[in-house]
Image (cartoon, rainbow, N blue to C red):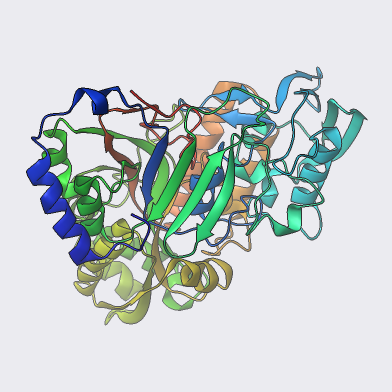
Length: 501
């Protein structure tokens, strides 16, 4: 199916597929092993350069498929060698010497070497960098090319997370000759190349026959953009889509789990889902108002109503599965009387009006209705403004033109965003900055965990945002499709191990 999905069309096709589901599989069809896959995604990326945008939808297409970094984050969240096959770290923790893979070529046939690696890191940290995660690279003092396969990176101060940071999509290796056009014509070193991008419909990848590493088992992969949850289910039932790594219509998971044609896998993500507040705008600049709002939102009702129970409550911006996690979910118990008292103390006894700008994901659209109802009980009237993804990135993330929004931050270990003065929710705390500065120079594991705990407590106490839940990853795919990630330790639909049986 090559056209855009329509609700009526996919429902009709789904009915036919369900009626045919009990038909016997012929021996010929059973012996045919497919080498293509159709994957459904809910958000279309604004472009395809992971080094120049914050949208998770970019990495969900490109990470490990089109672009690669010096290190990589695997399915278990561990740091692994990648374009750097090994490295040595100096005793003072400041100098990293990377030995690069040999024989690596970009998709346009040009060689990848240490000069490209230097360009990529210098570009990410440079004065005119558009990298959404530029702070990850600001600790780099100098990048030197020792020889074509050896790169030396000297840090300004030790950073225990440096190798992990190099595994983000934002640290992908690019060539100077093609970097400016990667948004629409991505040229990486990965096992897949871009074939075509039909905007609003699909992104097609093909196997890179000249790949330097273990070749992909798939010859072709198509990512189809399907934003509507009902259309997701219909496309899956009809066989038009083989996999939804992040399935939105979670109310249908029990039915799909009982169907032998499908595998249903509910895993974890790095997605802290928050009701984000503009900390420098109007009433929200007062911590008492933010605390009142935190007392008024029924988190469990949001999880139950928007996610059909799939989600773990959180009390700060940190993943519950991480060993440094501190359970702060009792910091703001549901208490409407307390919320009203705090509003009155701040001078807003009669409440106020504000906007709630919502991006397309289901958790935001469904959750927004529930939260608007919660806040109305304490006198806060929210005007719900649905936005498309590009609008949200422009109005909310870039221009900070919002009061409230709901978003899931899926970057791993990203509590450091609360130290960025120009970040969209505009939080500013000397106490938090002090903890993060100490964390950057601390390498001992337990000491880092203590500092991470302190950071979690500070942003919870300041009620920077309403911390809702850790986003669950509900994946559904064909029972014969293997190698899909159950968890999402990083924003990725890594196809390098995906195959049919």
